[in-house]
Amino acid sequence: MKVGVIGLQGDVSEHIDATNLALKKLGVSGEAIWLKKPEQLKEVSAIIIPGGESTTISRLMQKTGLFEPVKKLIEDGLPVMGTCAGLIMLSREVLGATPEQRFLEVLDVRVNRNAYGRQVDSFEAPVRLSFDDEPFIGVFIRAPRIVELLSDRVKPLAWLEDRVVGVEQDNIIGLEFHPELTDDTRVHEYFLKKAL
Image 1 (spheres, rainbow, N blue to C red):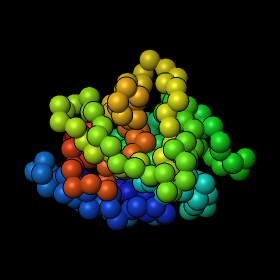
Image 2 (tube, rainbow, N blue to C red; image 1 turned 60 degrees about the horizontal axis):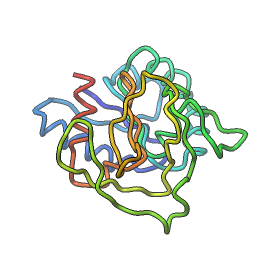
Image 3 (cartoon, rainbow, N blue to C red; image 1 turned 45 degrees about the horizontal axis):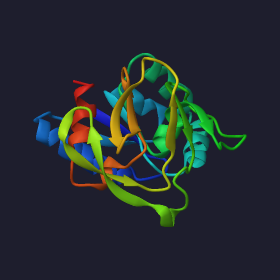
């Protein structure tokens, strides 16, 4: 199995490391790769859109020719996980977006960009997961906020206290936080099971 981490900007290497460790823990033969060109898409069984800066990721996905093929693959059922800026990229509606910014619009949520404030307002907090009883430490860095679920297809996946901070819709996972910045691979393992 190959998992493509869109490697244009953001915390790509952290996702690659977390994915490789999760594959090992699951006993699955495979690897995570830097996904930079459309030609690589035929090799992957799943895609991760990392955190970073959503305007830059959007622009670079368009410039490299990844935008439309990635959108089509997701619509056709390829598993995808977006964290932080990746969540923004997946979202149907984005509050606070710049006029030139394009989104994949495949996840039926409305998000607010940078809802948690500036970099100095970043924090870690225990997150409750739908698929595991043990708390997960969520790392929130200038994170977007899920402000509304726009269809019944979207299911909560993670909560910070009583607020939804992660969602799942069929083959898509969107998270406000950065699971790749912890040593805990449970979220990556859960995602990878979608591609098995």
